Image: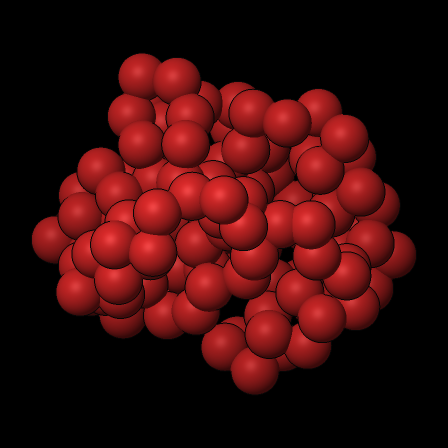
Length: 118
């Protein structure tokens, strides 16, 4: 069973993604801020990370940077609200993000992107 770590502070998105991925047979782990997300990556060694850009304690950019430094092959999908600056999304790709999904998003689209990466 593939492990997916979702780092997100929006409760609705957490529940929606957790439900969809669990139903598809993924083992889903949740972190509600960047600090706990980085700790969870070290503890869980997930097959894929999904992170929001704007979060408490550490941003998705900081998470991406720290993860790619230690686990360069770990795929990361970055979530971002449509209104967030395009430069942040570009920076995420420069830091090694594998994919980007704009909020609001269709859970089926996210699932397809996950399947493509793992």
